[in-house]
Every structure is written in structure tokens, then in C-alpha cells.
Length: 191
Image: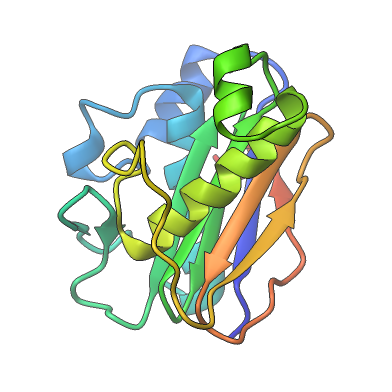
């Protein structure tokens, strides 16, 4: 199976009715945490992808790894990675461990650009999402690795994406799979 990618860009504020409709996709463990439009859309993307790919009408119960990575204990052959940032969300689904990250281009301090050897803000975010996707694939905490590199893994592949003009994204896997065409949806299509 290739890596399936879904994304949503929130280009205008969502109404209370839209936010309420999206909130129904949140798993119970996230009801009190994930209230931003981007987080709501991320879980709506997950529900949509699971329905498209597996015919599941309901989100299976989530379990959480040591560093908080969600997974389906009852479906060990279904792996996913959710990411959200200002105005967008990204989802990767695969039959092997996968990590995905998306970030909006925004100003970065000189110190951070220097630390990551980035020439400009956009380069920083491209390097950042690469690192984050690698951490997420491995189920590691990027914060815990703040001063260290992500450990190298044989056969690791990282795909760089620019799903929207002012965003960088990255997907990481150790499988030989390719990334399928990104499916872009609106928040309204997810409701």
C-alpha cells in the first residue's frame, strides 16, 4: 500500500456550527484537549480517510505510545500520523509506521535558523518538518531530542511536500512505499 495523504487548509474562520459539527470526530481522550479548528479538522481527516480506505464508519479506540503517538491497538496493520499547524492539517495513513508533519511558514529567530543551519525562515520550516516526521514515525518526542539528532534508521525515506504555497510538510517511512497524490479537502467537505 502506498502512503495515503489527506490535507485541509482553513482559509477563513469556521462558524460555531461548523466547529460543533467537526467536534463529533474527536475521540473521547481528546475531547478536552483538541479544540482548535486545526485539531478538529485533523481528526475529521482521520475519520474520512478510514472510511475511504477501510469502510470504517466509526473511529476505533485509540491507544497512545510512550510519547503520546496515537495508534489503533485493535488494528496493528493500520498506521497513521496527524499533524496540524496554523490554518492547516495533514494526515498520512499507511500499513507500516509513518510520520507526518506540516508547518506554516512564519518568522523564526536568528538563533533557531543558526541552530538548524537554515538560510531563511522557509528553509528552517522545511528542515523542521523533516525532523518532526522522522520523530513521529519512530514514536519519539521531538522535545526530548531537542539537543540531539534523530537516530538514523536503515531504509528510512523522507518525502518533502509543499501542500499549500506557504506551508512545508514532510512524510517519513521505512517502507519501500511511495506517497500517493495528496487529497485536499475543505473543512466544509469534512462535516
